[in-house]
Amino acid sequence: MSDQSVRQAATAARPTSTVPASAENFVQIVDVVKKFGETVAVRNVSLSVAKGELFALLGSSGCGKSTLLRMLAGLEAITSGKILIDGEDLAQMPPYRRPVNMMFQSYALFPHMTVEANVAFGLKQEGVAKAELKERVQDALELVQMTRFAKRKPHQLSGGQQQRVALARSLVKRPKLLLLDEPMSALDKQIRQRTQIELVNILDRVGVTCIMVTHDQEEAMTMASRLAVMSEGQIIQLGTPNQVYEYPNTRFSAEFIGSTNLFDGHVVEDEPDHIFVETDELPCRLYVNHGITGPLGMPVTISVRPERIALTRKPPEGAYNWGRGTVANIAYLGGYSLYHVRLDSGKTVIANVSSLALSEIESPQLNDEIYVRWSASAGVVLTA
Ligand SMILES: Nc1ncnc2c1ncn2[C@@H]1O[C@H](COP(=O)(O)OP(=O)(O)OP(=O)(O)O)[C@@H](O)[C@H]1O
Ligand SMILES: [Mg+2]
Image 1 (cartoon, rainbow, N blue to C red):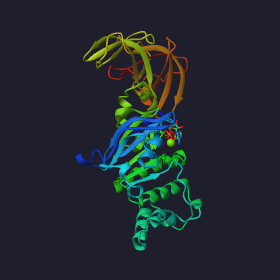
Image 2: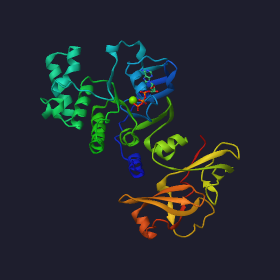
Image 3: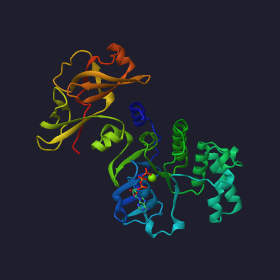
Image 4: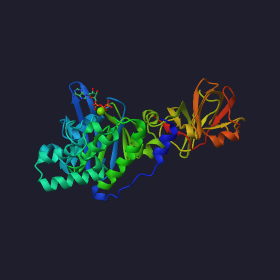
């Protein structure tokens, strides 16, 4: 995906449900570990999710997302640690009393049953009375706008419609906690984006607390109020999409969410309000307008997002945060372009430049000599 859409998703207005302070810890995951024999799938994860929140677990394949979700659903025993839902220990609750419903990575609808029957299935199992069952199924179908398809079979529906039926099937049971494992994985990109917004609106209307798993960063940023970036069974960073994008805490986070330029160097001056970093990758020092805690000489990486980098034809006047190179590649993407600039040091810097900014410097062409520069507030210092 493009930097542009990650950035837009990071700052998009999300419905913010008002959460009373007592509801902050609706779901509490406390130091949870899951081992499969020698494999540690989840390592000491602690996390709280507020009532009504839509929380996303994000990370590459095999990092333990589904395993954590399956433990929340009570489908997988916890090796150590505990999970509380609404103050109650999940391990102490018999399965039928667990207020959790999970929509699986591949949500198989029953092919021989109508939409209506698919949604009613779980309630029938529970022995819900006929009149109540009918009303709840109707409500659920209305919620996902599938009432007029009630008599159809799954194969007569589009992918997005099937996905909505699967959601209705989960919501009809009125779970306190809804778990979604890759809810959009069966959908193609266009309908995926539309469905993401629909889903957020439906969940917001129902007010259900939701934890979803995805490996699609754009999806997590569009939908979630907060997210956790996971790697190898651990949470690397936790925050709002905006916090994680603007203030990544590690190289992993910075590279996983959006693309970025990383400059390696070591600290040569560290004051409360700024640091200077010497690097082999630029003809000048790096300057960041906040201090860090760490000794002089310590190795650091400075992350600068592509949209923070400006191109100029003339040498920048400042004594720091610039480089000289040639245009190595241009990707025209409508309102903006991605420029790959190969610096004299051999490093490639990616700049995301608006069409307006480009017109002001007579759109640089392939192999043109060009300067890149950025401000003191553009860089984020990474020490891990
Ligand atoms: N039942 C199991 N037995 C043994 N190992 C398992 C089992 N389930 C998962 N694992 C291992 O645990 C790790 C985490 O798996 P998990 O399914 O949680 O990953 P994930 O983050 O959901 O990945 P994906 O994005 O591919 O769905 C993997 O190394 C996986 O091979
Ligand atoms: Mg998974």
